[in-house]
Length: 98
Picture 1 (cartoon, rainbow, N blue to C red):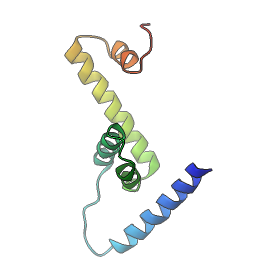
Picture 2: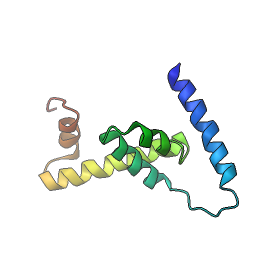
Picture 3: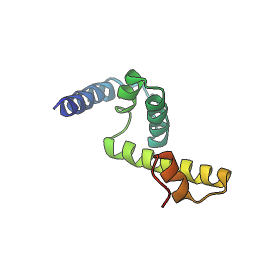
Picture 4: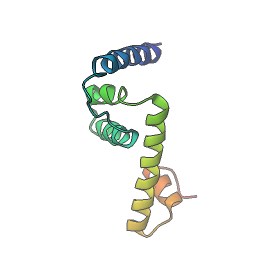
């Protein structure tokens, strides 16, 4: 229930911000900037920043950006560790080796 309330409130506030910024020519973050800020805020347990970044782009775009960031991070770590992406992903999630 609280998740739905938070989502509705965020969308409402986002629409107000969009209306306020219509004439200001202010650059809006793209989905990759939003994903990077969102993941950084989650890692730092910064709820205020998490709440803000969820208003920057649509939930679908944020989800896509987070997924893309996760893929790129796993690939980069796999190359660094000289392991497969599957091994790295399972290790990051604390899963046993497959």
